[in-house]
Image (cartoon, rainbow, N blue to C red):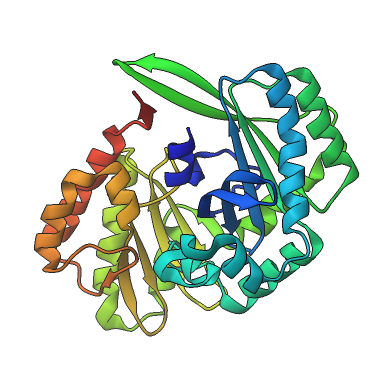
Length: 332
């Protein structure tokens, strides 16, 4: 489960459906090591603890554990987070913002807003705490519900994982547990509205935006919209359109299993392009990479883009989405 959450954090059913970018695994925070440290596209930090097949005592103690990690991070500034906490985990990205932008499929990250959000999250201790367990004792659910009711600084998600045997593989299905004693029921709806931004279902808003681009690019964009709609009709993707603040409209053909796509399609009044997300290819459709690289004439990289869309490329991407749809997240 550690591996699955690290590779595909969007599989977690979190309140508000935020987009997460994992920044590090087994990150030392004081006297302990957080299983995963991530960040939302808004700049809010996320601490994830996974406790599978543990005894009831360790499952109850996990609340104190994540709170201690949050207490350690509160009061740091972004520079200290990057150099003294994350360090080499950021690798070639250099900064948290660089890592998030490299994972931004829907062009929802705006550097100024993100930088301010990260600084506020650290200064105020306004974090998301995610606890993933094999089961949730009633006492733990009550504690989480109590914490949710008395503070608006932190969001706590309690996720349980059910395991099923399918075709010789062990399939893990995560579900969010909603504490019964939570009193501010509207807070989830408020988070949903804030996090969703300009996200709308289907390709309708993307098609409407095509009318604003120069005529020379409309045919290609309509072709891409038709292609994405065909993927959805085949039940290979869940299609949505994101309208960003900077005027970029992004069509998102995402895999339902993890709310991430092999590609995204963006346009504004000046340009139109398709971006590729190699980490999703490696996870869900690795066998398709050589054929796509042969068509592109270059290596498939995270976030690289093309401005022309030959039929051969769309056909190869369709096969990649078909392969991805047959892949099941599982452990041996």
